[in-house]
Image (cartoon, rainbow, N blue to C red):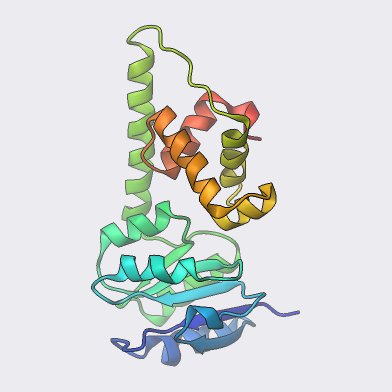
Length: 218
C-alpha cells in the first residue's frame, strides 16, 4: 500500500504553493495526496500531514488544530514567514520539519525526500539553536554538580516510562495509548518531571535523562 500525504490548507492562503508546487512534488515521490481545510478530514493511515501556517497567530491556531487531530502521522509546517521563534517551538514540540514561503521547488523536494527517510527538515540555525540550548543545560547541570552534595532527583516509574517513550519519538497521544492512560495524565507526569529536574522543555528533559538515568530509559 502506498504512503499518503494530506495538505491542510489555510482558508485564506497567502499563495498557491500548496496546490501548485507542493502537491505535484509529493506525487512524484509516490505519495497519494489529498487536500482540505479541516483537521478532521485527515484520514487514517496518513504518513505526512502538511499544515499551512501563514497567519499572524500561527502558533495558537496550530495548537487548536492538533488537539483535534485523530490520526498518528508526522507533521510538517509549510508557507511560514521568516519566524525563527515559531520554527524553534515546532522543533521542540516534535514537528518533523518546516518549509518557508521563500523555499523554491528544489528546496521543497530535498526536504520531502529527507522526511520520507524519517529525518528532520529544519534550517541549520534552528537546529543549532536547539543544540545550544541543550549544551547550555548540560553546562548548568555540571556547574550544579560541582557546587556540593545535591539530594538525588527521584522520578517515579511512570515518569521514567513516559521519558523512555518520548526518547523514541512518541508523541503524547501515542504515549497515552501505550501506557493506557489519558493524554492529560501524560502531561501531568511530564510537568512533574520538568519540575523535579528543573528542565524547561522536552529536549532538556531528554538530555537530563541521558546524563543521569540512561539505563532506565532504554
